[in-house]
Length: 200
Image 1 (cartoon, rainbow, N blue to C red):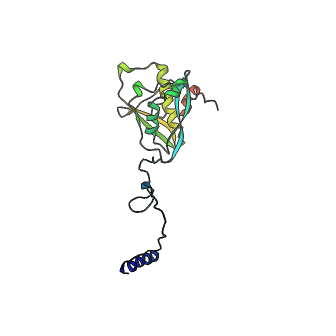
Image 2 (cartoon, one colour):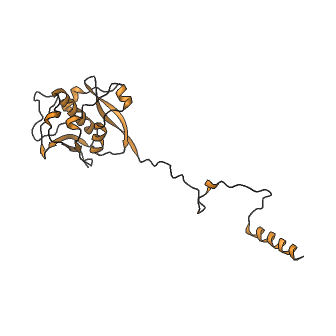
Image 3 (cartoon, rainbow, N blue to C red):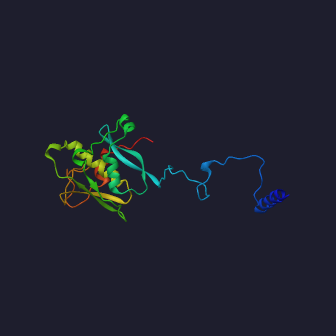
């Protein structure tokens, strides 16, 4: 009699808790909930920030051609320069793209921040290396790659090249004067004759 009363009391308590009874056992997947009862999130899920397409300028058949790259939104000039100096990827190489923005330019660095309003950015070049001198044509192509890549950003109007804390004059393609004017930045217009827009 006492056993029956205890069994009846247990049934009443379960009914009062609102937990429906099931006639057969059910398996609950271990990954369906975290220890605190909330749905679990896989720790391996990649977290991606906002991204945008930018133009990186490489050489193809002695002309400068833009290649689209996906990068972090609003990249710094230094990040864009780094993408350029890393050179074309394997697919781009197979399509005939190359970069001469290396050698004397390999250790170059640019401003870490975009100009808040349209203006020039500064690119610092490493000290001149007599053993690493490039041919004049390649020098022009290298400067063109850097200037066109950085000025593809609407907030960058030109590039000032500095070596040993002094602004230097650099070769241009679109002028009777071979070197840029002293104290002036070089612009995309100085190299437009080398530019070949990629077919759409």
